[in-house]
Every structure is written in structure tokens, then in C-alpha cells.
Length: 237
Image 1 (cartoon, one colour):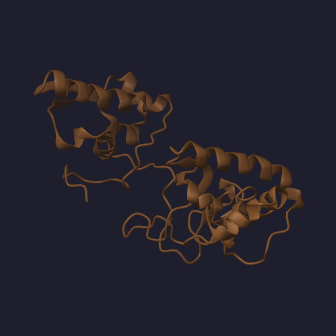
Image 2: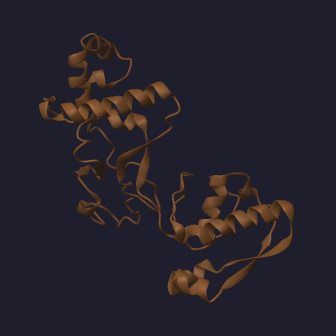
Image 3: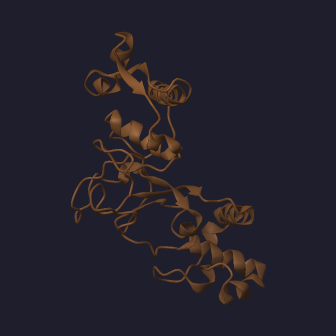
């Protein structure tokens, strides 16, 4: 558990895979300026944009009016890691927007339809789990795995109209890399491609999963599914 900041948390802990547009530049500048000042001029007072005020007035009005606040720049425990400081900075400014989960572990790409209905759930923010989007991968440092999966995706896009996959939601045993079944199928390359493409099903046609259902695009995903306790607050990229 994270205990290096005692203030109010306005959204769930975010992974340090940040994305932003020019609208976030005041936030990014404030955060990096504070970190620099805490190191180079510890204890100094700095001016930062009054970003919590932008929640009601809009960012442009805050910038045009020169609405700033002061902050004491001093070394804090949460500044030791980029992920820690990003989360604290977002909470401190009252931010509530976050992405639905799209930086997925590569292994989830070949589990066919056997996915937990409450993926990445927690007791407070997402008790029913997060929508996951199969458009990006995380933890792809082993190049041979990344190359294999990307090559498989490209080939399966060609093979898709010809596929005849087994019934059911379970991933066949040959979907498990290095298994006896997978090594056996590898001995016949054409069969290997045909079968392994079934492991990706249905991600190439419907790449969003939430609550046991698959969706083709974000517009099809409701704010809340019928059996769920609360509306989702995450956004789709």
C-alpha cells in the first residue's frame, strides 16, 4: 500500500505509462518544476497554476487570468519514483479522468475468450472490473516474444476469413507457449498458423472486453452493464 501521501485520492492509482495532449502541459510543467526546485532550491516557494480551479472555470480561463497558487518545493518521499509523483500530482489537482486498461500483459492476447469478468477489479473504484482494450502491450522486453506475437497477428489478419476454430470459450492447450501440444503443432507450419490464430479469437474483430462481453468499438460500451454496481469512470483512447 502507498503511504507516502495522506491527502485525498480522487481516482485509482495509475500506471506510469502517461499520455497527454497540449492541455496537460501546465500540469506537466508544474510537476517537473516542483521536482527540480525541491532538488536545486529545497524549501523555496514556487508559483504553480491553480489547476483545481480549472475544474469549474476551464483551463483557458485560468491561464488567461494568470490564476496561480504558491507551493513549497521540498523533497517528499513520493518524489523518489516517477509513478508515485504522477499519481500524487493528479490527486492534488483533483483530477478524475483516467484511461481504461489498454497496456496489457502480452499473455492476455492468446487466452482466447477465457478472461475474468472482473479483470483488474478493486473494492472502491472499479468493483466490477475495468474494460480492457487489446490495442497495446506491456512488459514486452523479451524481443523474441514480442516479435512472435506481432508476426502472428499480422499473419492471422490474412488467415482470418479461412479460420475454423473449435467451439467453446476455453483456450486450447496449444495456445500455451512451450507446451507439448504447441510443440507438436509447430511441426506442421501451415496447421500451426491456422490453429494459433484461434488463440487470438475474438480480439481481431472485437477488441474490447468488459464484464464477460466483447465489443467492437468504444461507442458500443455502456457506462454500466446491467449486473454491475456502479458506472465506469475510465475513458477509451
